[in-house]
Amino acid sequence: METTITCLTTAPIVLRGEESQTYRPGHHKFTEEFIFAPVLEPGLPSNVLAELETRGIHLIHAVIDFPGSHVTYYDACGVGHACACGLLFRRGDCDGDGSVGGSVTDALFLLSYNLLGDPEPPAPFSGCGPGITADRLLGCAQPGAGCGG
Image (cartoon, rainbow, N blue to C red; front, side, top):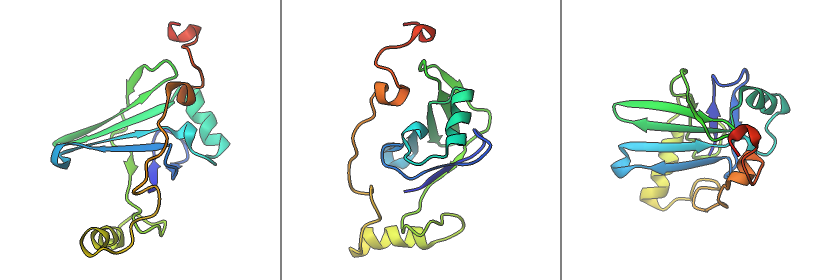
């Protein structure tokens, strides 16, 4: 899957790795939660990483909840900050063609897999990746002096 996050940095943040993005559907998919950890994305441009560091953005948590949605980003201390930009990402490159805008092929690809037994979407679709631990995400095992530690 590919996720593009805009508005938090000058250039869009494009995540493709299984460790940098996590999805959790809610009851009957009335809600959905996404956790994005750009620092865990292999090959993310250094200018984007530097801008995230400068802005203190280490983790992005997006909740799609009917009737509304919200995005919170977390700093190195684990303190959440509401994002005034609104919902900032798009998902869904199920067929792996690199396109998610205005195309029904992703939906048809997923429906074909679910209903007709066609090939599954590209990895990490059915696989589980290693968990994200605070020391890997934030770069420290214990909170630093600035984090109340």
